[in-house]
Structures are given as structure tokens and as C-alpha cells.
Length: 361
Image (cartoon, rainbow, N blue to C red; front, top):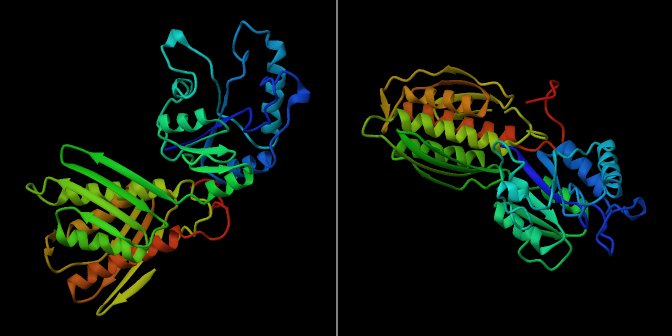
């Protein structure tokens, strides 16, 4: 889901004059580093920009438009010429005909523009007033305060370059809740974690395999699944894979600066080879034969189905081969190699480049 930066105009993008009205070109003074930082955010990060302004007159027929719009439009065009585009311009004024609480910190002026699904938890309000911090709380978003002394804000700074560095370094996390007539699942992942996990699926051996993904992939993983195990194990394993793949895909964001590919490892008598590509195209190649119908409480026929469901949800290509004599070792080595693949593929490569010549992953 798309993340948004709701950016207050006066006092945040430009310095606010004493009369609080930007009605002349000589009053326009950009804050330090705002153009450089916003251009880098637009080029490298996965945020949609929305400008918020409460200047009297903008959008109001009671004020002569010629006093305000040329200056405002000049500002918008200046940003646009530097590669900075705002998806919407939200004007902080009343819309009584729509019955919306549109004056900050009311959320109406923003939600009236928000058509479709957005990741508000991963979004931020950036402003210079306490009402901006409260607006962020009301939206369920983070807040960045231009100034000092606001402990309730996620970040306080006067430097836009620090805002860019903060947004760039946000931990890659995602949480998914998925409910059907067959399962109720919640999955949380942190791709920059340390390998901690809390796994509850009702299937002991499946729990053990998911723990391998967390520990050897060095991602923090929280999985809770209540499934129709009275029917069989199919829905629990399939739907967990879908939720996990979706969560990792969301945590990766625009996939800039990741290694993308990744690994094989031995486990006693077994050799597992797993290759993975977060390239945006789902595909599974599976070459592993099991002589037992079940390992622990999991049917062996569900193992390829788990990886196929993950591949579909995460839009990644997975190629798996394994050979050996011990069936437990065989599948555990596959999960460990898969975890190492994820660890390698999601690792930052030190650049902000998209790892493809196509221009899109």
C-alpha cells in the first residue's frame, strides 16, 4: 500500500511571514535543504506527497484569487521543475456541505482526497505546529515536527536533510491480517531484525520451520494462525504462506537498493539448493522427493504448496532442489536455505538503485 507524506506548506516548506499570508513573491523563502531533500525522497523513497495549507483565500471565493494563486502556483511549479510533484493540494478550510471536520487537526481535508488504500501507519505528517502532531495522531500516522521540544513527535528537527535520512532509514516492517472462513492470520515482519520469532500455527513442525526462516534469515517474525485443523492442515499452511509473502513484499517497498537475489547449504546427509529472485514475477521450480507421507504433523505434499503460495504472494521466483536420505533433514535444510536466500536478497547493497534494467520490479 502507498505511503503518504502530508506536508504543511507555511513554516515547513517555506518560512512563514509575520502576517501568515503568502500573497507576494518577495515573501517566498524556502527552508534550507528542502528542495534537495524532497527531490531525494521523490527519487529514492516510496512516498506520495500531499501539500497542506491553511492560507486564507486559497480556494475561497471571498478572496480575490489574483492575490494568492500566482504565488502559490509559482511555488508548485518551482518544486515540479526540481522533480518534486505533489499528488494533491489540501486546503485547510471548511466543507460544510460534505459534513467533514476539515480544519486541523480534523482529518476531513485529507481523507476527502484519499481514494484507495493507503498505509497510514507508514505515513507521516510534517509540520511546524502542535495541530500537525495531533493531526498525525488522528490519522494514525507518524509525525515530524519542524522545530524542537515536541516529545510527542516521531522526529523533531529544523533540517530537511535529516528528515530525508530518517525516512530513508525507517526499518522495513509490515503487518498483515488475513481472515477467511478457514483461517484467521496475523503476520508481522521486520526485515532488519535480529531473528527473533513468535510462531503459533497449531502445527508443531510447521512452527519449527517458520522459526528457521526467522533465525537464519535474521528477520523478526510474528505469526499467529487459527485455522480449521479439524478439517486438515492445508488451509493453515497455504494461508500462512500467503500472508507471509504479502508481508515481506510490503516490507520491501519499492525494492531500491536491495541485492534482489540470493544460496545453498548442506545439513548432514542433505544438500539443499534454493535460489530466489524478488523480481516481481511469481514462479516455483521444485525438485525434492519425500519418501514419507508426513514429517511431524505436516503432510509432505504441503511443502511445495507452501513455497508456491509464498511465491505468488511475494511475487518472487523460487527454485528449490534437495537430495538426501533423512526426510527431516531434507525439508529443514530447504527452509534454512530459503531463509538465507531471503537474508541475502533483502540486504541493502549500498546504493539507491533499482536492481533491474526494466525500471520496475
